[in-house]
Image (cartoon, rainbow, N blue to C red; front, side):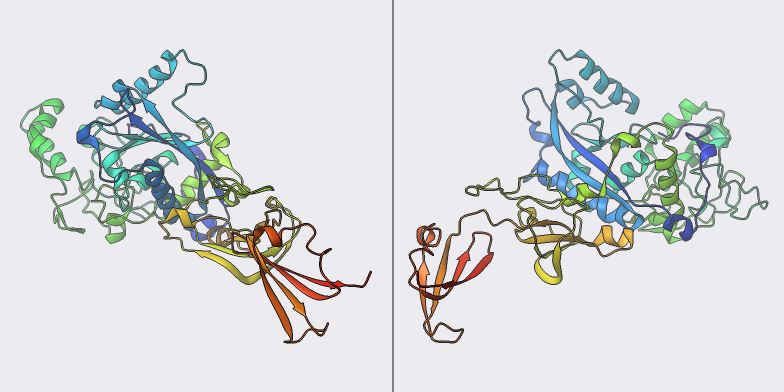
Length: 486
């Protein structure tokens, strides 16, 4: 996907790589939508299946991975759900990257049914393929990329953040590292990191990110060497490329350690890079080695949000309030709670649900204020929680979202949900026999019918009482009644 010459909107980026510049950006939230590519009959071929495959779970795993990787850099992802595309042609497609996207467009254009689509225009779209061997973005600065089922199934794989990096404007850290020799264009990034020395061009060549050192394509470096040897022997580039097909991937990596003593850039300057460059997610080291981005890469992404030269991000962005809303289920309002009255939240964040009070039969909007006890913990959810049935918003609580608070530099609590419209499941009626608060009491258990009886108070004899109602969600409501003689 890295072609010759300039990257989009080259002149609009600063090439900065200092922490202060990154810190000055405001957090950004982007919508993400997933697509599962299936056969015409809505199935996958037997050889393409994986044990216990649950597409919703896999998509939640991935949205969690995106957030855990990008949240430290003030980039957040809102899960908007998933759908399927049932078409044998796209399911079985295994050719060029550009051909894949052309076919996907053709499928949408050929449909007669109103409402059929292969893209959510208001989200970054992730397509999960069965036959295609490689994952790839449609382009740099794109709202579409594809990943294979195998990659998607492996929760620890960094290919997903890699392709998201492309969608957000990042090139490979090794971009055109040997371009001047056999690719026919002069975009080779030099080793030097000192302006004016050694042909420094890190701000205008390669990936255009100064704090990612010039590096080879670790996976394919051996193939490049073989191609050069064959071309020196008089072969054309296409013939040399074909002859080098038996190269060894990651030939010069021993685990995650680079061992090519003769490695050099296209000006024959020996490589100067370290373990962080091998670990960069936008490189081509084995995914067991990759784990990080650099400050300069994240600045480039944030500047890309501002520049938006491909017109992608304006429709894809959403507000902070979206992170305080469930992706599935709904809030109970009144009547009798049903199974759908569980508001589920996406994984990949640290949630503190704290006690709150107010007239909020539905959650408070983002800017509404309410009373809360930040130390009154109702529920805690770890950033690494994988039992998604446990990530829901309890009644009588508000949300402290740690990662967003860190990015904003605040300790805000939002979305108080304090609904008392549900009938109690049971309760207790306590009579203070001396008509004062002491231990001389008579306690009577109340079933659902008794505790919800609208005549409960009217039927009491004069005296001091505590009526305690117990709810299905674990909430307890206590009311003190002083019944006078009539």
